[in-house]
Amino acid sequence: MAEVAQWVAGARPRTFSAAVAPVCVGTGAAYLQGAANFGMGLLALVVALSLQVGVNYANDYSDGVRGTDATRVGPVRLVGQGLADPSSVKAAAMLSLATAAVVGLALVALANAWLLLVVGAAAIAAAWRYTGGAHPYGYRGLGEVAVFVFFGFVAVLGTQWTQSGALSFAGVFGAVGVGALSCAILVANNLRDIPGDEQVGKRTLAVAWGDPKTRRFYQQLVVTAFAVVPLAAIGSWWALLALAAAPLAWRPVRTVRAGTTGSDLVPVLSRTGLLQLGYAVLLTAGLMLSA
Picture (cartoon, rainbow, N blue to C red):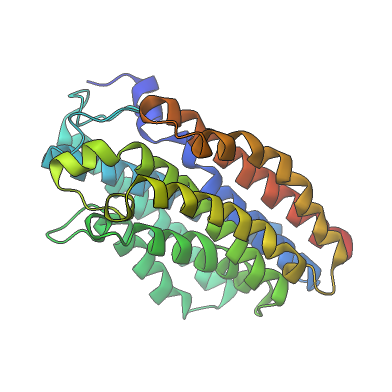
């Protein structure tokens, strides 16, 4: 039986910024519209975190039972390293996704935003089928697309919509920025895993593109996040505060540019997560100051 600390590590806390950041920005965009509801924002945060934990445990289970986690470097793999019974990890994933479903249903009902039920169901299905099922899309180079859609547009705009009932330039371009940085976290993870994924036949986008192009893609995603800030700041110039997060990009980008491989890329994930969190907090603060 895995220890509590191993279960926590298996949930991959380094990725939690991908859940927190979009809820912050979506709430900030709603605040700019004069319609922020922090209770609804808290519910959205529970949904986002539950989905993030759920997808992390689901990936641990599915990759573990397929044997694709057997030789990887990086964070704890509960199944791949034989630390926990696969059925227990699967149950943890299902419990997390069920929590997202129940809280999401409450959020949709309170906001009277029933169309989001379809979106929420798609998000839960995407969380499981990333590496689960007979034809996991994460094994076909589509992981980054899903992350951009669900942890960018869906999370940011869904949060904004449940609070204000409307979208805005700030929300849309904030979603692009947050989604780009969520993708960057995944790209850094898959860059690290290229050798092991090639060995077991897991064809991520990083495997398909190769090392040099994947490194350039990571850098382009970071640049994109900052390039859209002026667009998000149309009519809300305080949102340009998000540009002050740029120094946080220096270390992870430098590490990726340097050709670092293997376990030495692990810090890039946490530093990209810190970058995303700083970016979201500053963008949110700017949107609120503009209200």
